[in-house]
Amino acid sequence: MKLHRRIGLLFFAAFLAACSPYPRESERMADAMAQAEAVYGDGNLLVETDTVLFIPGLAEASGYYAGKKQYAKAALAALYNGYTERDFDKEAAMASFKEAEHYGELAGDSLTMARAEYWMGKLLYGEGGKQEALSMLESSCNHIGNRCSERAFVENGLAVSYMLMGQYDSAEYHLQNSFKVAQEEHCDLLIWKNLNNLSVLYRILKEYENSLHYQRKMIQLIEIDSVKQVLVFLNFGNTFTAMDEMDSAAFYYQQLENVLQVTEVNDETKLSAYGALIKFVIKQGNDSLALQYRDKHEDALYDVMCQQQKQTIYRIQKQYDYEALQNMMSKKIIRRHRFMLGFGLLSLVLSVIVLILQHRHNQLLKAEDDLKRKLNTMKEDLRQTVNTSVVDKVLVSQLRNIIVANRTMSRAKDAKNEWRALLLEVMAGQEDTFEAAKTVIEKAYPNLLYAIYEKHPDLSDTEARVCLMSCFDLTNSEIAELLGLSVNTVNQNRSALRRKLSLRSEKLGKQLRDLLEK
Image (cartoon, rainbow, N blue to C red):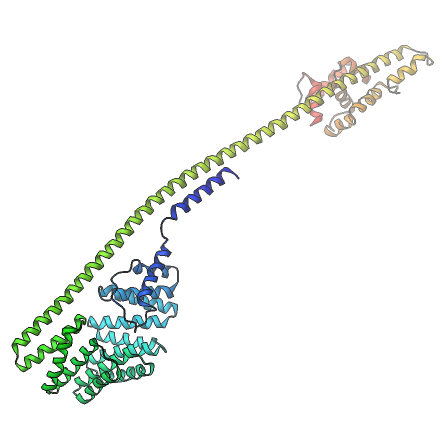
């Protein structure tokens, strides 16, 4: 494996090692969702849960899942966060419920939309936006679908809103619908809520018999525990007080006081109970008892304020601890990222150096191959040069032998001279010296004269023949004797060759050979 690839693999391994000790964002979001699901289940409106002060990472989960286009999870995360914030930060809760409605619409999850709209309606009503609250609760009814129990729950909340706004006919209509569904679904929680709200509604309408009828149903249909007894006795006392039946009211208020002394109820119920007792004893003119009840009422109010303060402090502390942990993790991650960045830059520099060295090495190898090739070419040229030199020496010797043989034949007039046959053999069987020289040259360099004519067609026959003989190491007189010309004619033709072929005066033979070999 190449070195730069190994460095890349080492960097990748270091990156994985650097990331592994810290939980990924997906794991943190999944953990936050798991904690929320453990508390709120699927977000059912009927599920009563304890107050949850803080779930780490839940506020970020909706944005995280929305960024990944997992809108169903984003809607549920926003709904859970709204549940967590509703008792502490109404604005944050409203924003979360709006997100839940928006993401639920994108995911086609009408049930989550209905749940978010219900709580938005409750929050809006608490802030004084009564009409907006009614619109939101009605929209929740429309989106709840066939979830009968939850639809009855929403209608009950809608009826309470109508009741508080003085629209008693609408309140009665929705309460009766909700009560009917609750009975069909055998949902004790909803039956209890509807009976209690119907009794209150009819008391407000001064239909006291109907109010007492639903209160008696509360006792008949539902197993009464000590906490619910407080509400039953409170309702009976308030109804009989409104009817001016003070003896009956006094009986139920006394029962209410007895239960309050032995039963732990939430502070809001205590405030309602002692508030009713204060009004009753003041109406009877018992100021000392009213003062005692007022003290208890103030104690309950103080407990509510202390509890809220403790919860706020606890929540702030938890949030601070979470943010401190996040900051610490962020610092560690930043340090690790810096290390990874430095390691990556170092790896990049090393990889570049390795690539440069490899490129340089390849260039050196290529240069070495070129040198070897040139060396081999030079050796071959040298070998050919040596061979050519030898051939040329032999050839020149043969040409000079032809000259000698021609001279001898010229002196031997007797046609039957026994040397004539030998001389003709030296002259390659040719009487003419040029033809004899041409025959000898063609054996060593085939078609050399033809090449001269082809490359330089502007040369005359004499110039071409002089050019042919000038390629070899012959004197002008030897060339003249081979061609049957005068030395002066040979000199003139050699000068013409230099002019036509643009050759220098020295080493004419070598220049002609180089020119013909191109």
